[in-house]
Length: 253
Image (cartoon, rainbow, N blue to C red; front, side, top):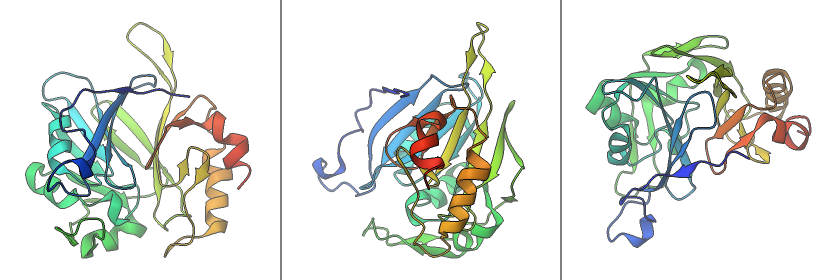
């Protein structure tokens, strides 16, 4: 089981313990360095959404990507530090994965990326039931509408887009294959899985645009071929690996 370390952060306290704090505050920040590239994880909001940050290098100005900005844009900007946010990738269009999108775009001008099938709701805007102070998420233009097999680049990093419908019609995962580090040690690939694959479960298929048949196909045709060592970064809760999920989730669905 991948074990990310906790990053010291005086903002990272439960939202309910902060007087007047939003329900979508960042509660903790973690960092996993076991895969082929380090990933920073911000755990945000009442249902533990994972907002992910990946950069190509650690130097000042290094290009970075945010995946699923679920809330607390101040915490996300703080975690980005001196990196340059180039892209914001949305694994799907649900409100709990996009609540911080409008403010991040306004503050950084980053390119917005998602699957074409999920772009409409992101561009129209939607209600935000988890944050009474901000009950509506404004629509944001999608700059790039990707499809299965496309590549999303972050500096020299090339993430493969895997279209995994089932939770929504336009659900995607981002896959970065295994690679050697600077010391020549082979590090496992990573899968940023959104709400497609969790630790011990798949995403729900009973929302609008969901489909059990499509989820089964996504599991068996798209994710099953990935190497067992691949570290999975889901949209909520704990990390896992493809090997750990192969029999109990991917092949069992």
